[in-house]
Picture 1 (cartoon, rainbow, N blue to C red):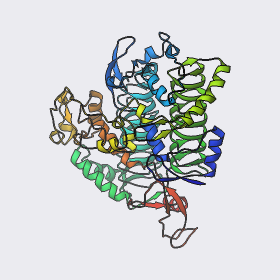
Picture 2: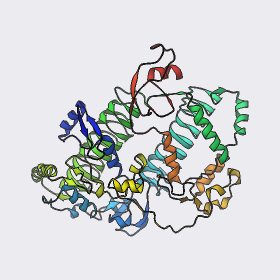
Picture 3: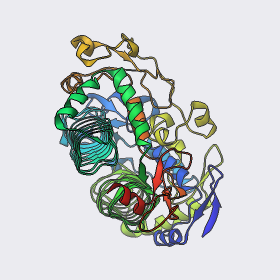
Picture 4: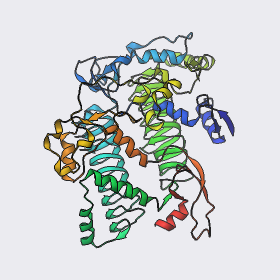
Length: 581
């Protein structure tokens, strides 16, 4: 073990023996940034939900793009980018050993066209206002999602139908304002539920139906705040809650959250794991400090690997699917091998610092927007012999002449890209969600910031003037510009105003759900408050009941994403199972 001080935040972090083994396998030096700062750096290159109206620079068609026109990034629509109408290798340039590598890559990033949205455009049906998706039909403003139909305002949705304002769902239908639901049907305002239907304001239910305000139930039905009712009494009581009223729903939310706090939580979300730590980890082994991961092995500091079979991966954020030896990469995957510094590196091998490179690439170094290419450096093609002779010289130069940013931070070989060359401003990116900053804090740390621009709309209705009950919502509400309740005074990428589209209004009316008072971005940020943070604390089980493995206070210790200052009761797995199952 070795303790280092982070070059960015100046705090100490530990590199363990297993980490050194991985770095030796990848032939890279140990990192000089701590895990949190490394994640923040990667997320600063991930613009999920900020769009701009921009025409394609090749065909001229109007559309939306991730890229601010003022950033100098060339923008192609998906159809043109994937076509044979242009050649990315025509932008190739010679390597200049008098300049740092990252400076040269940053210049190339502004020359090579990039696609407007990260989607497989030809798999989307009436779902153009989305990003980081494929195989969608009639979806609107959803992200990092696949195989969905008629979903709106969601994230991390897989095989879902008719879900609105939902995050982390799989195989779920008819859901609203819920998080981490699997194989559920008609579920509203709920968290961490599985194989359940007709659920309201509940947490951690499995195999349940017709439950309201419940927590930690298994195979139960017709329960309200964990109390059993007859079917007739349950349905009668349900009508008394006035679920179509916004004010009534806000009161119920507060009441149920207080009720949830009376019950224990397992120290982590996850099943079928072996010697693993983190949260929302499933079917993994020897995977440490990772979050929202399934099917990983011998991996560490990973997040959003929602497609299984990932082995020997470190600092790998988003996607997955049959990958091995991936380090410091973002939004990459699908049969990749031996990747460092990838951004949307898909189906490739032996690649270093490849961005938006797809389809059977191999042996790339510092390349952008290539497809089916090999032995390229800064998009210039080389012979195998020339490539293998030049790459070691570049690596040596990267360590001897590191890129130095305005804050004096040095970037060596195997470091992720400096945020100074990112295509996005800090508050446009996912970094703002997981590491929220004010404008002043961002500038102090050396990040750029997107200033609000004048918008060509006028708010026509304030949130407090919306009808309280959905039955009173007029049809002409579709033309209204509604002010967001946060009014831009938060750190939540607030759009200050929003509109309600026709399928959305129909959804609210048909399911008797009140109108929202927050813009979609603020609703997302509020919803993910129900998801534990990407951080671990060492704690002891809080159980003081008599169980088979202990009397008095339980002595089992663990790493958990529940911080010590949070009010929840946190149990080890043994105590939790005896209390819940």
